[in-house]
Image (cartoon, rainbow, N blue to C red):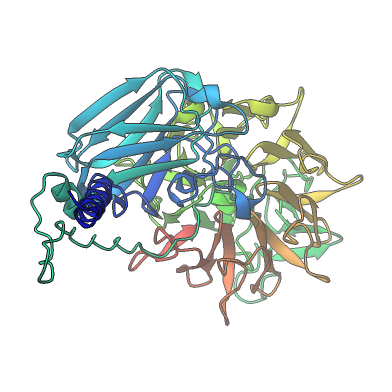
Length: 584
């Protein structure tokens, strides 16, 4: 064999080696079906951090960050069977699943878990259990034929937090897998010595959809009624209002006393009775709240023991409603819309209520018999209402729930991290409000007491605070003071705890990191985080109540229609057709 022949054979061998290497590399053009798809998880531990979407954002970095812009790791609460799931949108061929674990700490939390694949009909396609943690990556090979499924779920088999850095659901590129079997012809070589068979060009990677905004955790706050205006003289004036120093009384045989702000209806001696927390309807003295509906005031018809907080409070006492919203309709039925992957917007049949409260993944209603009904995600026991509970107001956090009972004591249930459901001894209250991890009560003497997590001072009301309404956000709290000014405390990274100068309001509501106030003239002013337009109030808006979600805002307008703005990833700002409501 001469030198020329030897060189030619060596060249061919090198080309063939390169070709074989190329043809057996099947991942260059593979498609990550999970990237930017809709993901959910059993619970949210930190509200706007650790969301389910962090595991499908394309970032495999397993280091936890408290900076929202850098947070790319999921995080549930500590619970039995914590889970995470991605919806691929339709049944797809799944050849491989890559699971990336945290690397900064807590790797062993993912030591005992199950991976399941189900199809559109929720039929189980594949399930596998694993008992060692990914360090940092676990690859599950489902073969060249793969599995046909839509939902990929990762669930802990024990009681722990679930954190995932990234989950990739891989579909092998068909051209690449065909090349492995040698089915593709190479391009014809030039004349002369026959060259080695060339590979077929690899198929380009499928483009991905633009990144959506992250899921928000829910956070609603308490809202309050406002002072009724003096009635006009004319006709039968026996029930018109008389105004005196911070006191309004209704004429009539019982001469019931009420105060400004929430306007407590008193006893027959014109003394304010804090236990009877009724209210006059916004900007009128011709209706009052009887606990279930607004009633016309006629001679001798107003009874102090008929009234409570339900008519004027609504869902504004809760942090939740992360991606859904509910309205109490004029017939006392409930209609919900927006995010519903935990059935939090699916109202139980036949439900007749007088107040609603929203959590991040659940909803509760105060029924007309003063019992409480909850639905949606019941993780941590947040939907397990205590036996025999009779309430006059309810409020929800992300993972816990509370009720103001008919005797003005407070009872809470659900997740008790940081003592958020451990009510202070001897607490007697007239309003409650819940944040993500903390709880507050407006006491009978108009002071405020809080309990639970206090990471940013959200549980430390200002000294000497005297309030008529309280509202809680994720890590901040606000109070509507007796003089109708607003004071806030807690986290202020977006200015959410800095109300506009000179603000005079009659109701306040808080979202995750923004806040809004219903002003005396029925206009609305908002402040704080406005990344999703949640603090940009529509022009010419005239409202009677406000309610905020995590990153969206809604109002009940003076004509009883509803208008919402802000983040709309789950159509939470798209109002149902022909909705007429009396409370949000």
